[in-house]
Length: 116
Image 1 (cartoon, rainbow, N blue to C red):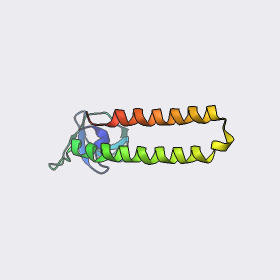
Image 2 (cartoon, rainbow, N blue to C red):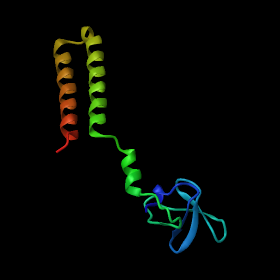
Image 3 (tube, one colour):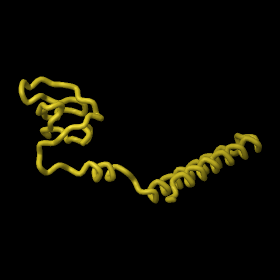
């Protein structure tokens, strides 16, 4: 398991020594209590028999593609509303260019998110 997935307070083995995680990048050695920096990407082994499923923890941090698309739609609608609010201050050419760029960016995002 990667060090960054270990909860604070958990005891683990790193490079043959037992440590207790004390912060996002630190752990206390069980032998002398000295604090040591541990790389986030370091592979460690939990001493706790009930090791949390790292893959499940990572998936819980992710949002669904539907939620991402809904958020993008709301953002796009807000951008379009703001663009309409300032339309009178823009030249027709600039307004059209901004409208095209916003719509293109939104469509590109949607295309990149959609399930393949």
